[in-house]
Length: 330
Length: 136
Ligand code: B12
Ligand SMILES: Nc1nc2c(ncn2[C@@H]2O[C@H](COP(=O)(O)OP(=O)(O)O)[C@@H](O)[C@H]2O)c(=O)[nH]1
Ligand SMILES: [Mg+2]
Image 1 (cartoon, each protein chain N blue to C red):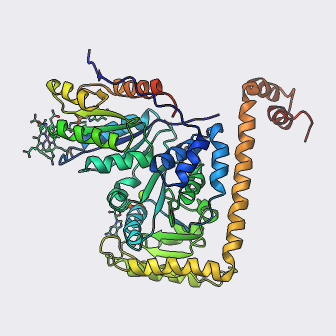
Image 2 (spheres, chains in turn brown, blue; image 1 turned 90 degrees about the vertical axis):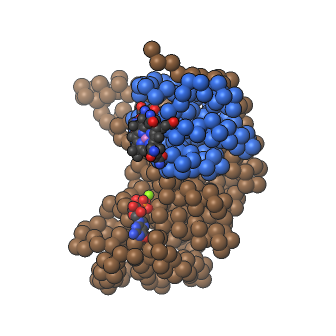
Image 3 (cartoon, rainbow over the protein chains, first blue to last red; image 1 turned 60 degrees about the vertical axis):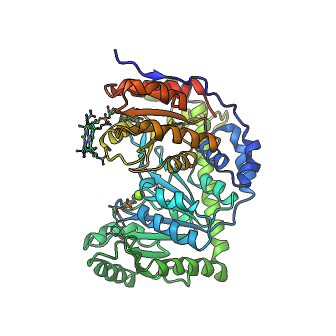
């Protein structure tokens, strides 16, 4: 029998109420920020008043979304941006999303491996999040984590989405500036892969510009953009940049472009429209979430209603009404 | 309804390139439903503690096969105290001879997993540790 050596069994810190953590979050305490994000993520009812309070202090940060297929170089690019932006004096926040295993519900969150050194040397705040079953490229509480960082004074805040395919474009209504990253050498595949996510880019970046194939990929994306429908109402035309996180090539032009886009949003009035749109999406998503919660609360009776529906003694709509706790038919 | 996953930072400290164990343990914990953040190789105790705080992990699991575990764990635990993060459990694994258990306990390591321990023992040990502490 192998025995584990256990020593300190007495670690029981007291639970600090979330509302008491709010001033510490606003003052920038990393322990408090991290704890508040966990409580949002864990969906603690006790934390909702605190998160509402925190929300009042948000709206200051430039939120940048970075998306692209797995292996495109997103995490490495974020690491380079952390270094470059902190040198400019910014307090950079990062929320990096990786998928949860559909089998165990667990996750290995690997983005941090690439960002560790940049984060630790530069006082940035990097938080890894698992999708916990959520589709769309983000985790259910990604935006609440962004809120906490925003209220604590971080800006810009970079969201790294999971590696996306065609239609995981939730980042569009989460960020102010969306960077779509493409790896060189995808050739004709780019057509298929990009169909869904090409349109969402405010800035196109071809990664790994140190590789010779990068120029062809830049040309391919420019070609596709030229075929674009031109329905966009924006006066911003999305540039295509080639950047290397390894050699540092063109990192500066990416920084300049990020700044320019932010300025464009303010000057053109598009910022207000974007904020409205993003907030609307958040309300809808939250409503769906609360709905689901209410439904789950009634789910103990699910089996009984299920049987009735299968036997045609009830119907799906009536059962759903009852499970939601609605007495009258809607 | 509140649901939180057990979060574990799997860390490699110092000049120790043996990463197979750390990767195997990460998979074991993932398959048991935990969220695992892997630091990568050659980290300093300060880097590990900073990452653990930002990620709000319940446990730092350190895999050490280099033989330098006593000084490295001493520094790691001191760093946790300095950052007021002693609520994070420290679990040690890898090649750790039994005569070093006592010095490790003294510096603040909570659990030592012997090299032959099977996956289910690793999982139940960590789960019980976190559950006994409760929600924070
Ligand atoms: C494979 C191996 C290597 C490979 C490593 C490949 C890699 N990328 O990992 C290579 C060949 C590169 C290597 C190199 C060296 N090695 Co070597 N190596 C081993 C060997 C044979 C097996 C280690 C292994 O991978 N096991 C398989 C994994 C899955 O098992 P594990 O790591 O023990 O992990 C399990 C448990 O321990 C536990 N666990 C481990 N960590 C954690 C953490 C937590 C939180 C938990 C919960 C559980 C847990 O769970 C795991 C799964 O069950 C060991 C011998 C041994 N007895 O361990 C020597 C050994 C570790 N190596 C040793 C040495 C000396 C070296 C070298 C210095 C040799 C040299 N002179 O060049 C170099 C150093 C390299 C470096 N940069 O650090 C010594 C270390 C001596 C010491 N500590 O006092 C050992 C013990 C061999 C010996 N008996 O002398 N090595
Ligand atoms: N040559 C080169 N390789 C890179 C560059 N950026 C990332 N990579 C490599 O591409 C792989 C995937 O990078 P990663 O950042 O993890 O991609 P992600 O999955 O999109 O987050 C890694 O092996 C990186 O080292 C770059 O600028 N140049
Ligand atoms: Mg990544």
